[in-house]
Length: 375
Image (cartoon, helix red, strand yellow):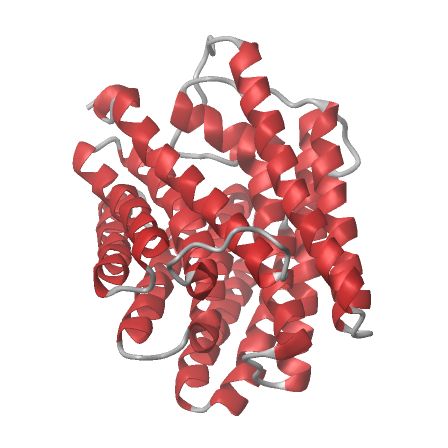
């Protein structure tokens, strides 16, 4: 079975559905910020989080894993998440959209099961845990939980997936106690997310501690601490990773120090520290490696990539530290617009760079999406 088992012409519509989810999620963000933009008939604001986290990030993760497995059936996972997100955008939080997104998580678990047969290990276990967290989030959503109540599971999905991919890079030089620490942090994260659905106060504290333990592991064992002293792509990737870890640490402190929250400024700060500061930093940093694996076209490093990354962090800092912490609505609103511009700026720059870079002479290994970027 060769690398063309998932044809490129099949990948592009799936990738487009993820792009649609991103744009729809950003538009709903404008509505939530209270800006005077036309409001659709359907309550787009109600699905803002699931569309961005599961429709956009989930589709990217599932698509990359499907390409890594090199099996055509695996493309059903990102296809379902993309289609489910489109259904949520067009018709609101209906049953069909939520069921499609839950089916995507089940298919992603099957993908990880096949990958596990090839090469089992703690890194793949963590990524499988991320898929399980995705399933748990959608199951609770179907059971009647509100989106703010399933945020710990949504956060576990992105954190466990990314931590597992970072472990893939670090495992050759990782001591046994480092692996034990990694597994213990993930266990605390999972236990906290589970407890948060049953006993919100105690679960939130435990979940925050799990996040902090995971961040501590990433900071100590991730090669980004060394490659940040390099140049070019390795340094850019490292800057994106380390700045994202700082935002994840802030989210951990907010959960561990103040307990559960489902609305208000602290909710805004916690939510966007995880899904903008951490998750979007990871996407910015890994895009030059993951997109070529999926598209078979290069996304070479360019210095302009620092501009949207820095804009993202600067505007998010203003949003959290001034808009949320000091309750300054004007700063909160326009910093939120800056967040959106940072994402759109990176997306536009990436598309332009891919189109002008020409075809790739050598495709990166799709099974190891991060390692080639930072070695």
